[in-house]
Image (cartoon, rainbow, N blue to C red; front, side):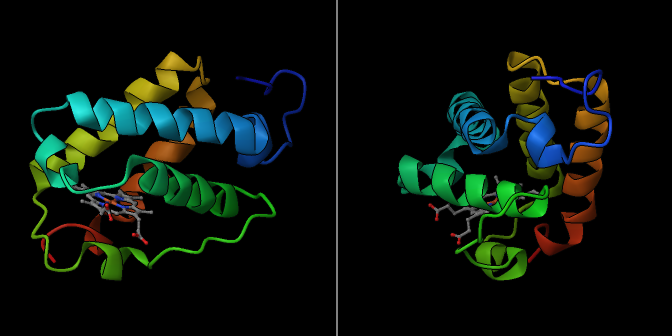
Length: 126
Ligand code: HEM
């Protein structure tokens, strides 16, 4: 959803359609990961509903919503996985593809990509 034309000052949370919009995007991010041979084995033991809930909460809280994130911080969540840079880019590609599936605008995509990239050192080679 791209509401920028109507509400240019809205939070990223609002521009993505609040929790329902973000949850739908998080679901497609997870579905894209499952189809992505570069990373799908990483989630072999995951409970999809739980991962989707945590990613939804984190995005809602980080993008300006009232939600509380109940998951681990990014370093604790990824420590010991030794995730590499190719896997990191694969996750970013899956996120961008999910945003396209929901017709999210360029401004929002740019903002989200910057946020993802800012977290790289909390995810890669831990
Ligand atoms: C900036 C990029 C990333 C963000 C924002 C992110 C976010 C998250 C969040 C919120 C969780 C849940 C934490 C918890 O269990 O409390 C998580 C878990 C996880 N992440 Fe990431 N992640 C990122 C990159 C990656 C990458 C590149 C990989 C490797 C493919 C990866 C693999 C995993 C796995 C395997 C889990 C555990 C899932 C489970 O417990 O079932 N993540 N991530």
